[in-house]
Amino acid sequence: MSDNATLLQIKVTRLNEILDSLQSAAVAFSGGTDSAFLAAAAFRRLQDRAVALTAYSSTLAMEEQSDAIKIADGIGIRHLMLPADEMDDAGFRQNGPDRCFHCKKLRFGILAEWAAQNGIHWIIEGSNADDVGDYRPGMKAIEAIPNVRSPLLEAGLTKAEIRTLSKEWGLPTWDKPSAACLASRIAYGLPISAANLAQVEQAERLVRRFAAGQVRVRHHGVIARIEVEPAQMQNLIDAGNAKIIIKELQSIGFPFVTLDLSGYRMGSLNETL
Image 1 (cartoon, rainbow, N blue to C red):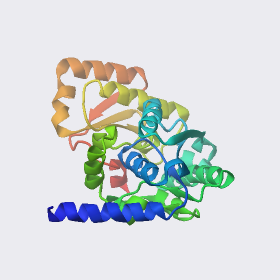
Image 2 (cartoon, rainbow, N blue to C red):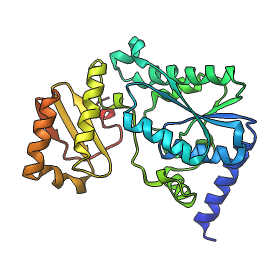
Image 3 (tube, rainbow, N blue to C red):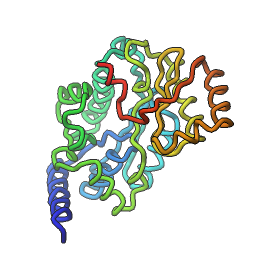
Image 4 (cartoon, rainbow, N blue to C red):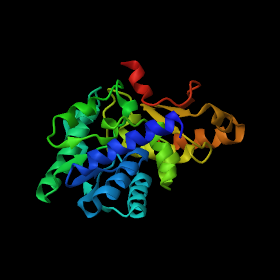
């Protein structure tokens, strides 16, 4: 066994020890790579003492909601969809740099309330070792809520290791592109509304017809800034495709359509902070 494989096994053992100590747990479940792996690990260790909870609203694309249901069903874990409406929170709607704080506070508050009412001891969420040092105001909200733990982070598992293990376990999310709520596409300071969330969802659905992998359409008011992986850019620049993209994005309210030549970057709007 290589040194890397040995280290990974040590981390998995640590993860299992953490999960075994919890008695019961509710997984904050989006259906992404991290939360799906955590749900599968929790279900393996805790069986019916584990449940997956998805807090959904207009910030979670319908495709992501459907994926979450299918993925949880494939894992075998009990899964519940709990309604959440961040739009009731003025701090969230104002869309400042602390937007994620308001969102996470609301969502994890809903999960915590459900867990308390149903005798679940812990809420577990899928932050990993790569998340340390990132700009993540949402983590401050999570840290303020009692009985929330981050087992993947505590075990030292990186995103790459989670993908490797997910593939070994046969999880369909092992190569799923990273996702984030639709609000993360809207430029800071531009108020969030149901209308501009819908614009982003429609725009990304269109661009994905022409580009594989990571796709983001950043909402800058009258400007749609498209981010894709560099290898996919030519597909969008192609004259025929470009005309379709421009016409359809203009039809949903973006007079100006741009392609970011720097390509996809996670949280690129944070570059302005």
